[in-house]
Image (cartoon, rainbow, N blue to C red; front, side, top):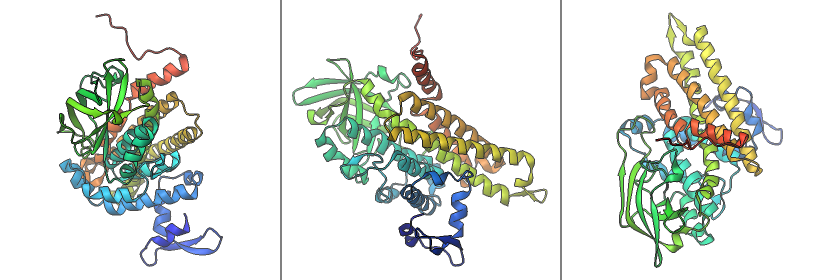
Length: 428
């Protein structure tokens, strides 16, 4: 833990244990922080992180524990995003993730993974808000946009002075996203977009939306930056969700929405261009699920030690111990899998299949881990005040978005066999 961060923290009196600073000198380190970081890190995986990555991880955890955790159940219940937290999130300096330049932080993939998992440890809806902002819309602009587009949009988006959304999925095209029906027609000075989108997060209050549409001239999928207040853009919130309730997912209708030529993404000329930009978001979706699992494990570890039946802690029962150990083992394996994916991405060696395998397998193990945690809480496991019920519901969304388990499995299979079975042959 870096000394600059240590000096910036305040701790209760008498809460220290002996430690050493970066020079080897003896210092007092808060004992609660030591326990707090070690609960789910059974294999001391934090030693694989750089001091900077660890500092950022702790910074985000403190914010989530102090500013978010106490208030989040009521917002989840009412399906409202706590908008007052957005400026504070922007001030933490991790939005924009791995994007370099244009006032973005230029973090390593591992550093951003630590941030997104720490956010998800407390709340997956806010983690998904960050995922959409940094890893979908902003990264798409950074990878496929012009220099002028990057200069225009990325600085304000990285500080959360503006919010963005990413509109790919349609009412009739989810897993079959490449068949999207929204069209873009070339007109003097720009493009006219018509069609419908479903599920884009952040879109009810987004300042800008990255919209994917089919070029009527080339029949290829292109990308466009659409201003949130554009004439002809109709947005309505999807109600009655039982998962990720705070995420403002919406139905979008585009009726003759004009987009200037300057706001067409010049690097987005085919669906494959977009697929390549989506690989990193799949890795970060896996890290969201790791964060959810860690949060549930931490809650279970505390609860089993405090809650008693037959005058003994729940942690004393063998069946409960086995579940807790299975959860812990899953977390160590998921963390190492995710860490290796980040290293592959950072070296430029990660393939689409590797990203898909990570997303598929990690979310599957996280789903099991979170379900075990909900069981351990018994009846309290369905009450939002106890955290695990909310996490259990939210995990279902993460298991599904950024490619379902089945779709990601087929992407991996295509890469290792050379045979694609994603698109079935219709015999109707």
